[in-house]
Length: 293
Ligand code: NDP
Image (cartoon, rainbow, N blue to C red; front, top):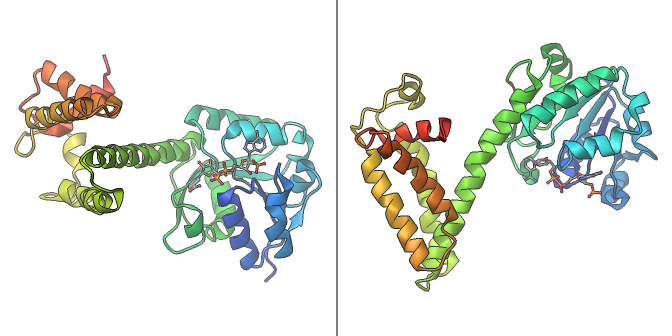
């Protein structure tokens, strides 16, 4: 069976990893990147570097975009809209759900189908069994390209709203980025006592690793109680966790560290206490986030 042609636009670490994966699977591959030199290794491996974005789009029915944000897509394709009719754009770049929906409308206006996606692994893991990618957009478009897209990582289709996969990506990255900042905050704190990061991080990572087990202790799906609006207060209460949040702010401030992250966390507990929920389970802070005022 002959493999279908694919185009990849955007050759950062992610785009290059996708391109390598598609080439290895035997797909005729066309690539384009603003900085042409980033394609050298791919061209040596058999890819074609298109002279213009319009030629890149024209080369394949399936066009995968891997860019810093959606602005970059317009910068690249804005002058090549005549090439879009009949193509499928799969944009795997980060941006807001609203800008993603606008882009789907923009693509439709030029006769192109549009899927948005969020890749949930770093570049070295693209194309491995551990990789998965969230998609949303028209189901028929998803199904039509599922086979090729599955090469990049297991597709997880979320629904027809193109903003949905983007929202899932931002939600996942909200967990990831705040955890990374927490880890660096904690490493800086221990560093003030002379502890090297190479000693501190293994201790801290063990805590990060255990969060899933802690939340699942007792019940398989801790989301069920949240959905029911139940915060029974039989485990860690808002008052107890809030006191600890206060201690982290005080410790960080006295050590001369940036307290911004600690203050944000403290604010969630303080507002729950102010609203009379101190005796509830700590999960009550979700209301502080849902209703910031
Ligand atoms: P990079 O920032 O390294 O690559 C970005 C690409 O966008 C490059 O090809 C760059 O071109 C291009 N680009 C940016 N702005 C413009 C512009 N105005 N005009 C033309 N081209 C532009 O990103 P990554 O490869 O690391 O990531 C790509 C996407 O994947 C991002 O949205 C990221 O959030 C997401 N992602 C990244 C992961 C990672 O671990 N890196 C993991 C999961 C998702 P040039 O080479 O010329 O600069």
